[in-house]
Length: 509
Image (cartoon, rainbow, N blue to C red; front, top):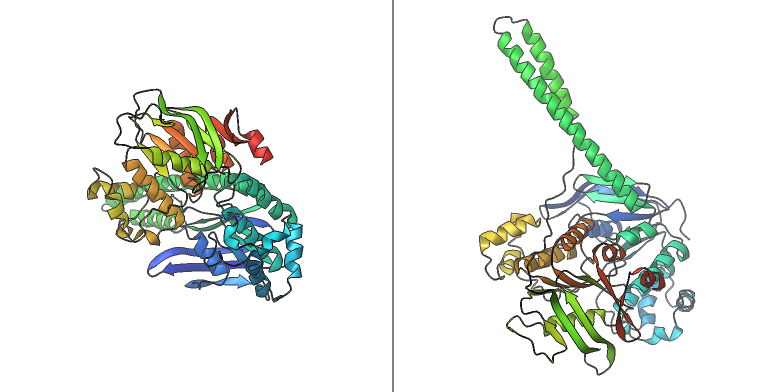
């Protein structure tokens, strides 16, 4: 277990990519708690973690580390080159980092402690699900590397609810470590973390409370600062008017210049101590709202969904109708076929059809304009510029594209850059922007909140709640699912069944 005196933090830290500032004036110290690090997309959270872990060098300020401190870290993406290695070899790399190379008995003990079958060690790492790959890397970093503090970047990405519950148990009960955790999963943060850091353009803000309480306090402070700044502005205007009057009167009575000078000195003092306010970047994540000339947007009858590339049936849908304003959450265990269903529906959609075959198992309303958000965003042309990709939408010229990019928070100086320079969260925002320009009325969303920051998630929730559109979505985000869904479908024992609410599924996951 990590010693309570382990120290890690930053003092007046700043980091630049070229001439672009990523963050600046950042100061904080971690203690023995599990601490959340929260910030909007592009705020520099992942970069800050790399600086703490020693992978990147600060441009200014310093990293504070107690002597002999050992830091374990797991990035948000599984490192490349691990697929062909055995699970034992991947875990062995963590042993080597801790100076225990060759002590494989530690791996056997770890596997037994986390309740995994020993035969998993001989399998190629790439045969594990994406969720279990992340869980194994987290367990290895926490136990085999014997760190004093553990740093986790988006640990719930690609985990289903069962795996999230497993991770929550590990972090809160099994791994007695100080931690710094970057996540946009609000329910996860509230269940796991005890302290909260907010990284913003105006520096770091620290709170000794879990995320939801800390955020309320931060918003309260921002509101109070804005109110004080408003009163200060009002007082400065009053004093400036008074100084102007004394200046006029001093023409006839020079003694009044002293009064004028005193007022101007007071204005200077207020200006020097003026309350600084924070305004979040204007970034609207908007969905299009299109009408469908019927109450039913999609009918599915007698669909057997098979695993890709095999004849194995995952589950069957006897009959399903999706209404024109339904927001349906698709629930099921990892590997049950949730993403496969969304992909199959996207492939079955044909915008050129005026009518669908009445015998087809998937029949869209001809008025449907469908868009599909794939959680991997694998179809994004990373070498193409933001502007060029957005202008590919029908009817969108450069002027409209520039305005749309600006409203989504992309600075004019960046719209000519390739998409690959964007963070995962910024890429997700860009995809949603392009989807909006396609003017859809039916959304298929596969883990839409995976990379969105909390403000982006709230934008998406508000848009889906207010827009008269159809949506079928998969999400491990319990907060998002509860907020958005109007119907719940669960894959259960090879069938798709409708349930009243998700709570029993969440509890059993």
